[in-house]
Image 1 (cartoon, rainbow, N blue to C red):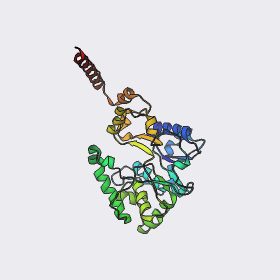
Image 2: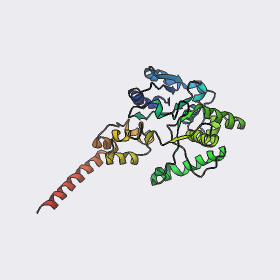
Image 3: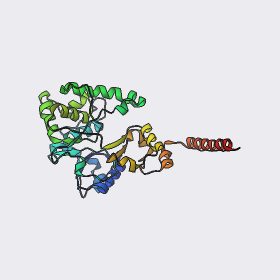
Image 4: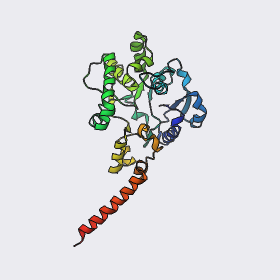
Length: 303
């Protein structure tokens, strides 16, 4: 596994690594890559089945200026995911986010179709396409950007299959992406991301185009709450971690909407889970509304 992190995500990474150790049944290895300035902070996480590396190992590929309107730190974490194979330490590696928490035991067989071929997470995400807020805020531009990758790699397919993250990368596919697609254009990873900043879609489109490995398609291994509404829906429906674990290895509450609420607990009961989303005024209104509703129903039941 590969985790690219940094100081601002330290608390998330701590939680992830704890869950990694708790549920890792096949001694799968985790490599954490952080900026050199953060090595001392993350040093406590290094140990059994966990290595810590500085991102300077990838210095030849990294950028110091924004790319495609995105800050260097964001682009560099994408580059490191695409370039990690170059270290020669893993034939296949699963990219995991700092916000992820493993919620059930996992084994190599969860990620690999056989001894050499990884599963490929390839989905259409139609449940996000039909969500109005997500569609207008993210979907339209994201689809345009990913179609651009399809066009560049000459993948003629009306169906858009990719993933947001948490893919098992094949080093063989990534090596081909570099030598057979980037090199003839005299591009580095940053040049591809300047065209479209979706590292997982670059991998997925080249995988589908090249067919270098057998594609054993799977749905996402990680449940991601992309926005507040999706998380609130699960809370209100009373879906627990035990329920989520029947379908997923891990869960992510995207910090792009939840960071200001702190590192949210995933084990909270319904009131505790709702609390971070409610102001004191809203909490008071909920209590009053509950009291009014209870009073109304009692009045209606009187003969």
